[in-house]
Image 1 (tube, rainbow, N blue to C red):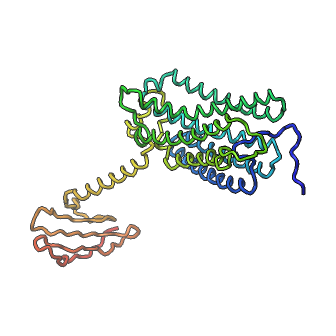
Image 2 (tube, rainbow, N blue to C red):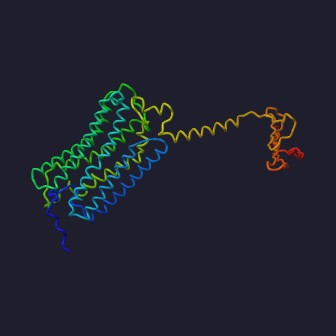
Image 3 (cartoon, one colour):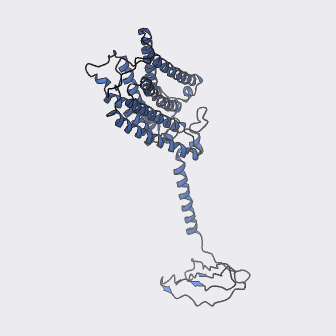
Length: 402
């Protein structure tokens, strides 16, 4: 059977080589399937953490965002596998490319949120300032607008052969990838700025771990995602290579594609899961100003340590009960009315401070379901002077009136 010829259009297939090249069944399907499985496990892990926290009354939306990041990458992997089985379908090819370029945005938002919490802990005065809040709002609004610009120019480029429109499509794509690269490194810049600027107050503690731990985790994820975003933007700024390629282009190889796309993202998703970002970056729900992050610590209700605190409280309670029972003074229990107790256990304890006394424990147990008394049980009698066990004194069996 002869291979299917590409449709003449529209839509028209791109004449330029892209990062990773054409997806193939022999290579791309098995490799992409492995990454899709890793993304699936990572998404399940973050969703499990999210649900467990919600059951404890602790909200941490970033776990949900990381779940969405994993799902976006699963969808991108699925479309690449479909493209490998239908290489001449231009619509599937452009859809797979768009999903690849947009999946990292959720990771950028998570890193920006981590940077914001670090800034508010180190510099609460300007971290909680209204102008800084509007700065973040503008960044997010531009991000949404850039998504529509990138999608629009990408679709427009496959429905025209006009050189000017094709150039406009390329310019729109370069703008979108450039802005995403900017947002990927913005969190690192904000964290560095917060560390460099002098502080007037002590850092406000929140979550589990110190500021150094939070900075290390946020820097880890931000660096990996920024590396991938800047590499992809850089390859698009290079002069286009017409298809078919006369010689391989190293930075457009499949190895670079899987390293700077899926490998870095798997490391971020699994790294955040193992680092338990839900505990490290947790802040009380409804925080609105300086001092709110550490309110739970001051009140002794830090949710990130709730489990440990509960175990410690239970342990202390058991210890206090044991100490109280051991240190309680010896007493003598006597029936003041001179009557025999009914349905109860009577214990006679002689003051242990009398050196000549003998400790005798006699327990009388009466069946609660019948009037007949049970045989009393007697323990050994120990002479404090000799510390040797002696025979217990003879006890007369008496019946208790029902």
